[in-house]
Length: 118
Length: 203
Image (cartoon, rainbow over all chains, first blue to last red):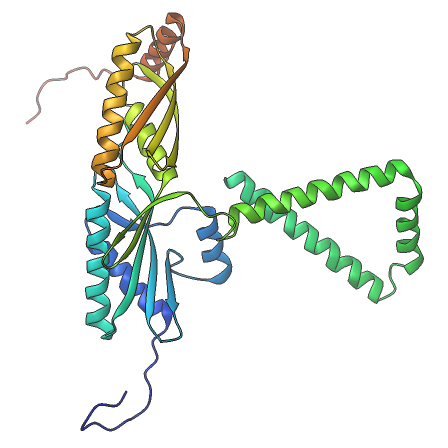
């Protein structure tokens, strides 16, 4: 990174897992939401690839723009559009604060609704 | 689902072990090459063995197809309702909504079991619910209550103004004795706390 008046000392690389960890933290801040953990495919991915956050998929396009796909489970009774919007805002704010990068898209996939059992 | 995963893992472990062992054995001449060719010749010559082999291979191919469809991200892509926010797309799995409907419905005293299926069409959301009732309740009143409840809950939760059509199919009404047997069973499961005699106060 080079800014006016600053020396270029090298590049700073951030691993995808770091980004995923930030997303994980941001999602936990939203009430009634957690990252999707169930699902055989996610479990196999976690087991075989050693991916600690299989429910966060990070895409980097040719223009170096970052997009996220986040699979979540919401609590029974919550309004999904509002909750998804809150998740998107929290994640965007957390990523901008921690890494100073602008996210292109944050896709939220609601995979399950939990609670509300008799 | 766990069962399918276990079967798939077991199958692929056994299959890979078999193939690797065969290759290793043939590489170190522990299994003569003639044995393999003889086996292939028998498979080709004997129609019964040939049919059996074809059957086994067909089952393996089918199993592979099922596993691929279930576990690959493209093949096993779920049906979703999607809408766009300024920050990105939000998709809601129909399976999640079906699960929600099941939970909502089984809260009703009169309903023993339910199964729901959601399809998305151009005219809106079509929800088909199959229920098994516990007793002879007033079906028109109950079904209209469920329809209202499901419709309002789905519209609330997904926050969309799409029309929702709810169809209810009553599949079975359980007889009274099954219902009373269930109540008796639940009463039997409850164990009263042991009676401790009062021995007076101690200083």
